[in-house]
Every structure is written in structure tokens, then in C-alpha cells.
Length: 333
Image 1: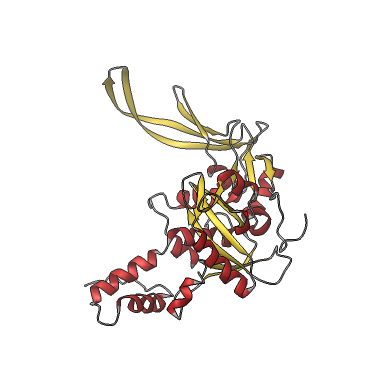
Image 2: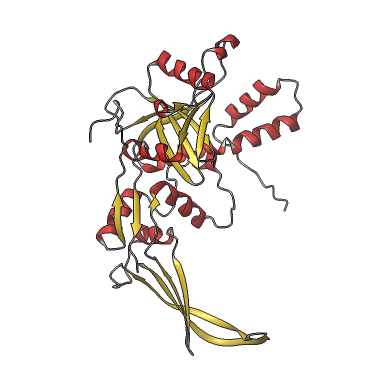
């Protein structure tokens, strides 16, 4: 019997094909069009990642990309369409916000004056606030464009200012948190059978057939917990735990425990959770995640899991970060 490996087209496949043909023209050969569709399906990772983050944090009511094919062509001299339009349940006004998305690892984000002016002209035209989403290494910041200040030539903002004016918490629902020192997971492996021994420069190594005969969680007070909720377990595994190994004649004990240092944002935990759920994939396909109703398989609601972990003494601190200057479209806190 001959079997065919059939791959399904993305739900927005027709739109992808249409966009590629609009760029390449109807005379483009099929292979070129197919390659263009694949590249477009991979998407613009930074925009897609930020969109997934907003959807996952729980306060986003609507977010979509804006079509940036402008007519007439001369309009590009005056207007620049931002990347995204979004509406959050935390807003005090009814109008959505516009978001331009950037990724830069330098400690300074810089816009040319005419570029920022065109973005602001569009925002003024439609009467919506203009925000900038900046990914600095693995951390996202979201701030009003007005916080960018004129330097010699360009409008700039530093990481420090962007963090001080970060709206990702009050607008989108992001929080910072800390797993309590001493909280972690402990695995006990029973040595069933010695398979082999090999000499080394420092001594020798042993190969054993083993069975995991105990998995125990400990809270920040050192209490043993064997009935921990699955979402709280996932929260702990998403933390950067310190590893310690112990050997006895009958067992090997592996301890993964939180140390005294470290604070993590909810949105950075998302990347850890996704990577942990699919360790075989080195690269997250953010565009595909946009199509999923539940983004993470093991955590339905991060805020609910975080509150549960705090009550059960695994999380020691939860920080709700506010900007120095609260925007008009958010209620006073």
C-alpha cells in the first residue's frame, strides 16, 4: 500500500498566497511562489512573538496586524502605518492603541525624526495612542512614543527609561515574580543493575539501569509536597533551577532547587514553557502559535497558576510594575 504524506495548508493560506502574488506578480513561477509562502508563514518573528505574548497575558481583547500597503504611493512621505492595532480590557477609553514593534540588543533604541513623525501623523489621523514595543534580548517593553526624546539627530530612548515607562504590566497583564529559595523538585533514581564500568583519568564511570522511584516537590519552607497541581509544577520547571547530584550505594538523587537570586517576568516564562513543551524544536514558530486557542499546553491561565503557587508557598514574591507616567487611556492606579 502506498501512503502519501499530506500537509495541511494554514487556515490563512489563501491570504499568504495572495500577499506573495501581490509582491511577485502573476508571472512568478510556482517554486518561487511556494518559497515565498513558506517564508511568509514563518512570519515576522518579532511581531508574531509580541502578539503571542499579548494574547497569552490575558488582558488583550483584540490584536491584529495592519496592512501596510498604502495608496497613493505619495502618502508614504507623510504617513507610516504602524505594525499592530490592539485593544486591552484594562483601557479606560474605547479607542484601540497602535503599536510599532522593534527588536534591538543595544541599550539605546533610535528612530529617525521623519520615521517617527510619519508614525505619529498616522496615529493623529486615526486618533489613537502610539506605543512602541521593544524587545531587548529576551525582555519586552511597551511604552508611549512620546517618551522618545530628540538627541543630536534622532529620537532616542534608553533601556532604563523604557523600563521605567513600561506599560506591559498595567496594560497587557504582565507581572514579575520570584520562586522562593529552596523550592524545587527532587528525583530519586533506584540503581537496578550495573551495566558496565569504564576507567577514566580521574577514576571510573559506571553505567546503570535505573528506575525513578520517587518525585517530590519542596516549597520555600522545605515542606515536601507530592500532590502538587500540574500548572504549579510547570511554573517551577520554567524557573532557572540550580542542579545538585548525590550518590548512595542504592540510589542517585537529583535536586533542582531555586536559589536566592533572580526575578522573572511572566512573558519570559512563556518562552521557557514553550521550549520545555517542545524541546526537540530549537526555534519557536510564533506565527503557528497565533492560530492556537490555548498557547501553552500545560498552563491554561498563568495568573491563576501564579496565585496558586504563591498560596502554596512556592512563589515568594509577585510584583505589579507600574510606569512613572500613567497614560490618559489607562485608569489611575
